[in-house]
Amino acid sequence: MPELPTGHRIPDELHDVATRLVEEMPTTRRQLEELVRIPSIGAQPEHADDVALSARATAELLRDAGLEGVEVLTLEGMAPAVTGHWLHAGEDLPTVLFYAHHDVQPVGTPDRWNSPPFEPTERDGRLYGRGAADDKAGVLAHVAAIRAWLGARGALPVNVKVIIEGEEEIGSPNLAALLATYGELLASDVIVLTDLVNWQIGWPSLTYALRGMGEATVTVRALQQPVHSGMWGGLVPDALTGMVRLLASLHDDTGAIAVDGFADDVRALPEQERARFDALDADEDAMRRDVRMRDGVEFIGDAGTGMLERLWMQPTITPTGIDAPRVAEASNTLLSEVRVKLSCRFAPGQDPDRALQALRDHLETHVPWGLELEVTLGERNPAWVTEPSGPAWDAAVAAMTAAYGREPAAIGCGGSIPFVAPFSEAFGGAPCLLVGVEDPASNAHGEDESLHLDDFVRACLSEAMLLDELAQRAAR
Ligand SMILES: [Zn+2]
View 1 (tube, rainbow, N blue to C red):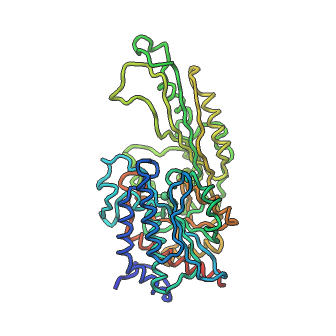
View 2: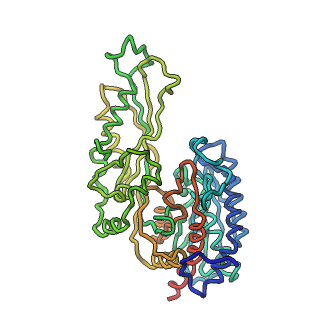
View 3: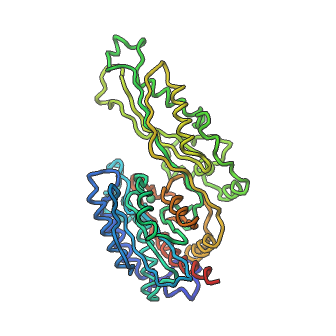
């Protein structure tokens, strides 16, 4: 007889559903591993067939869980999404939309993985593999919760729709089209996004703020072509030194953004939120360990601003790629042209168009020595923030408290999920519950991504409990 996790506070009348879910965890785990074996890397066109394969596998999982109307949704130029539903709870009860995504990030440096990224491997209670946490665990959390209810009771306590996106990791470029074409099919009263990070292992969280994201490509040119560094160095500038000076001007000595106007419209942090962050008592050493900072490396940013505020409520500008000759191929020349990709995270309140324009203005005024500058602004989406309160929020707090035996923390997230704002808006401001399957050591997007297996059981259980809590509140 499988046991419910220690410390849980699941009410007796739901033990049949919870026990069913725990009994089926070996199946859930096997299905997660099968999904992780598919290298559905959205950013690499050579993996397009794998993204299509993972969409079909996901559809199979939804059908197997007992959903109806399961369909792979396709649109011109969009990676396939998957949907399904169960709508027999009655019109008086709310409809919940479960969101996750089945595409994954590239693997990064293969040598830095301790086991191959697409061969799910268990070590020390964690399942390692690309997508094991972000976000194939999210897909399986939905599947586990739905299957447990349908298995134990033959019905769900509310109406449920599911959308599993296929291009979240490339910034969801076709969201508007997805919404225009399938908005009615997906319309819901509450959205549950299982793609976030829990505050700590065993301590769940609800995320009420996400940073937005944008990018710029910056090219600096000094010459028509590279020239002899001995003949001309010291008199003629090179593009790489110019670019490095330009990049250095983006931040002050502490690493805080030094771009005039960039952060002017960032929302001031209400005292209540600051107090909430302080109460979380962020452990600096644990953070250093979780991100694997090297000894002696310091945190950056304005020391007068709290660490969590810097992570969740302040913007960033980070160079993430540079086109310049490799060291092994370097010749003794002054470089004529260098190109950089800048990735920005936007804070709540910030207008991305305005911020990117401020960045462009800064680059134009700071490029040294009259070098030629070209700036191309890319995709952008704003931050999202909601009130951490209301009936749906309370339902999620109750469900997580039952499954984890501990009340969730209300937190922000430095990352971005473009889906949230447009879909919530389209569904009349439907509340969005952002819940986690990751923990701070999951290293999503990095090498050795992993899922904490005990917490995964609790994450699945809290979704099953959430459906009941939402039904209870609607009935009151
Ligand atoms: Zn994700």
